[in-house]
Each structure stands twice: as structure tokens, then as C-alpha cells.
Image 1: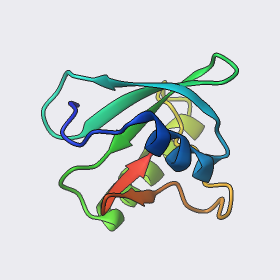
Image 2 (image 1 turned 30 degrees about the vertical axis):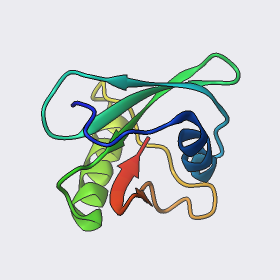
Image 3 (image 1 turned 180 degrees about the vertical axis):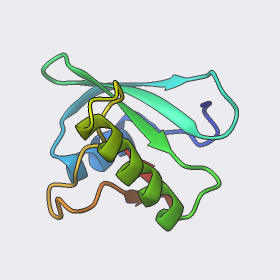
Image 4 (image 1 turned 120 degrees about the horizontal axis):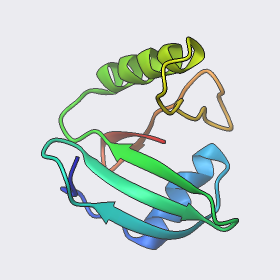
Length: 102
């Protein structure tokens, strides 16, 4: 996890609307090496994490979110990806041509 692609606050707010979230602030997480990761603080004070898949295809990113959802449902301590508001069967949207998930 790192920050390869900038995500300014206005774009973070627009992107988070796909999940029905209202973002107050965004902070890039500088650790890691492959994906860009961000901590989003919501208007209600809750925090969620957004991953921007820098090198994966939409299909590959969607497969990872399906695996994480399955693990979370089976009791493995991992965050479950959030479904999109307009299509709860999906968790991925594009930002600058790259898959993104929360």
C-alpha cells in the first residue's frame, strides 16, 4: 500500500458517493508498494479505507473483493468490502481508469 495516484478531497467525495458515503477528509497511507491506499474520515467521524488498484484489472480487483467478502462472512477478521449503492452486487468503481474499492 502506498500513494501512487493522488486523491484530492473533492474527488474522494465524488468517488465515495458510489458507496453512499459522505467524506470529511482523506489521508493517503504511504506504506507499501503496489496499491494506493487512503483513510477516509466520514462526516459522522467513522473511518473507512479505500484501495486504488494500481496494476490490477477490474476483474482481478473484483475477484479480490469477492474473496475478502467470503472470508469476512466466514468469520475471518478482515474488513468486508462495501457494495455500491446503485448495484449492491458490485464493490468496484473506476477512478482515473483504475479499480477502486472501500
